[in-house]
Amino acid sequence: MARDEWDPENLPDLSGRRYLVTGSTAGLGFFSSLQLAGAGAHVIMTGRNPNRLAAARAAVWRQLPDADVDTLLLDTSNLGSVRAAAATVRGRSGLHGLLLNAGIVHPPKRRETTPDGHEIVFATNALGHYALAGALLLPLAAARGRMVWVGSMSTSLWPFEPIDPELENEYSPWRAYVQSKVATTALGLEADRRLRAANVPIASLVAHPGFSVSGRTRGIRDVNEPSIGTRFADNLQAPITQSKEHGAWPLVRALTDPEAEGGEFWGPARVVSGAPRRGTAAKIARDETIAARLWNYCEHAVGLPWPYVKASAKASRSRRWWR
Image 1 (cartoon, rainbow, N blue to C red):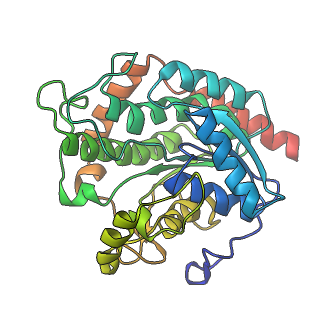
Image 2: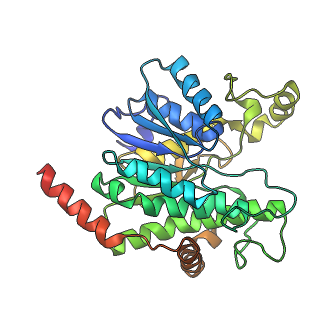
């Protein structure tokens, strides 16, 4: 499909394809799940709260009664939860796409740690997704799928170098968020380099949603119910914002466009808003030295390297079987 022919409101037929979306209970994750399901995909919606997860699935079914969606408990800040969820997914058929969306957008005022001892923003936004992607490498390889990491335009405005990834010394909420997104973007680009080098047929891409706000997003019971004040404030910023629905467009395109390639960075055409287009990641996130350092940090923090050799072999067996 030619890039200028892409219509985010009329996606290609995704019947027979299976995707997992982290953080599906609201915002970008919910609307990405809704758009994928609307195109016929089987979607595994994940979240850490079972009640909110059930409500989000019900919201999908209210709009798409025939949607093929499952739910799976997954808390990316908890490595035990990541391992359990990945084991469940590996027990099923191949996985065509993994959208690494879950994240903390409003960090705590003071540094907090997870039960595993990691700073909670870095753990949720970056480290947990690194662990999940590695744990799902085999089903992704079997389907020759792709993974999409969710970045942020904030990394171009505040290029914080993650010398101290978990901010043990100088924590601030904003630095925690931006630094985690530098890490997420760098890891997504580094993943593609390493997968190519290991001959694993999985593409890794990064996408960002621009400036997407709930106050400009349609109301959906139990999913998006902004107050009148939020609606008013967000609409005052209309020239530089867009809805969460439109913010999901670059994520979904990076995940499903047949012409999208590993190592690419996708976002809105006008950076803050607009149709999904290929762009350029922040310079700091493209620094391969920084990316390699972050990768090694995550590998040691998780305690398990990605199974490149097994994934390559899995893909080879799958190719012979399909022939």
